[in-house]
Image (cartoon, rainbow, N blue to C red; front, side, top):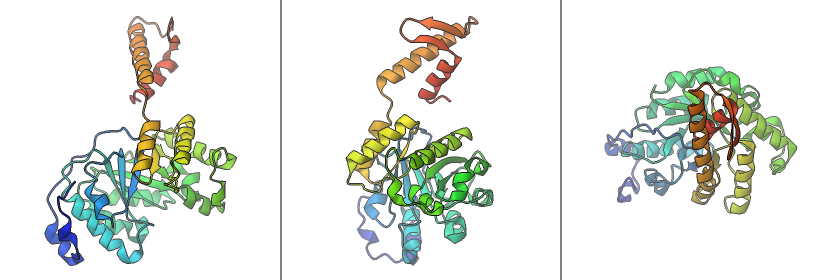
Amino acid sequence: MIFDDLAFLDNLPLEAYGKHFGSADKPKNSSRKFRSNMMLNPLNFKHLNSIDNNEADMITLNLEDAIAPSRKKEALYNIALFLSHLEASKSFVIVRTNPIDAGGAEEIAFLNNFGFDAVRIPKVKNELEIARALTLLAPNKELHISVETKEAFANLPKLHIDERLTVANLGILDLLSSLGLPQSIVQIGNPTIDYILAKFLIDAKSCGILPISFMFQDYKDTAAFKQWCQYEKRMGFGTKACMGPAQVAIANEVFELDSESIKRAIEIKELFEEHSQRGIHGFMHPEHGFIDEPIYKDACITLGLE
């Protein structure tokens, strides 16, 4: 917990928040093990108070569509207050602002000096919005985007104008609305959804961006959520947006590498590198079969080395 007692926040007026801001500056999170990305509502003090010890690999503090316009400033100040006292966190901490031209620019400017790892901007359509966000954002922070407009979906590789843009999140429901398609097609095996997932995955991977699959809204249906995680893992995804700790636990389990896969990848990597030093780039192995450079590269990907 960040605060042992939250009683001081009861009926605290916004103009008094500044008196309670701390001076903590959380170190940048260096982990790139991203299986789960949990959305948190910054109007909930208990949610904010747990970001220092959360099981989600990524935490997204949401200022956008889940917050009523009349309470956005309150949510922003809540985030600033808790971040200003955050000494460390196991999770990679992200702030999801409003669209860059609808309050997002001001939110980035206000939060820049607080301790978090990335800003995520929604409803992106073109490179100019990316460029503006990068100009506003502190250089030690990453930029993430939500792919939820038809323009961003069609042109994702063109949006990668800077190495600080590292992650794209698929906002499937907003994207379907932008495309004029019904939400009822969000079903495992639906060919249109398969195409959207596959295109998003390949476009992101082709330009070095981590693709995070969409949030499954029915948080009570954990069986269906697990099916989606397993299905998307077979497609090549490694990270899932989550709503609540139950989904986080499932995503962490499904997308975790099993010990046998890790052991096999380590052995293949060591075998190939040993043979490579002798000028041999293709050879048979009694347990792992034929090993050549593509097999070696796949082992490196498994180990997170590429």
